[in-house]
Image: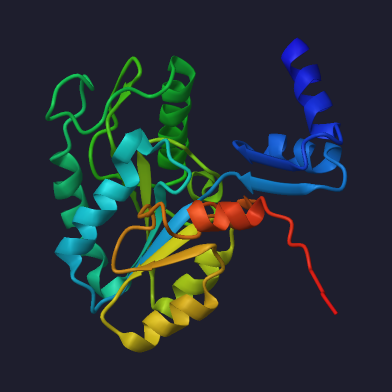
Length: 267
């Protein structure tokens, strides 16, 4: 409680002219409400999605999507959570995702060949298994057997997922990715945008028209073409829309966010 009072005092004080925060949506809402009239930069939650179009390089897409979904055990704001796959290539892509995921070693982070270590705590691991069990009850099918050893939670690819399932509606923040079958980009587009979050999305395609539409019509702070939405370079403007936050990070853009422009006129 003492730290909470201190944080509220700092947020509401006139001394700091900028508040920059990375964390949860509820805390971001508190900062927005209590900070008064000052600059705010918020990097909050995400529910990253990608679309796999029939012209895409499926082997490349599966390799990159496995990395994007499971790097850092899925505990990343732009961790890939939803994969919308065009019907014509759904079965082939699902098989490739299972193969690529099975290659990933789960174990001690002190071993050089380990890809995934433990989740942050036992509660996070238990919550992740809860997501899986709930999705299975709703009709989803795990492509690899769900497996947990304490805080070690093996990566899980869920097939036959629908938009109504909680596993795609909320941020799971765990090594779980869901495959959703769609007819076309027109089918995937509103589903990808139908989220309170908008941090980063991606599209795998060799169709230039779909590329241009994705850039124009996907509602997120960043759009990646032919790679995972988890891709980020420090020099780029990084940040989201909707509940994913306000403002942009990255050296140049952070400086701009934390600068007050002064207009000078000399006559």
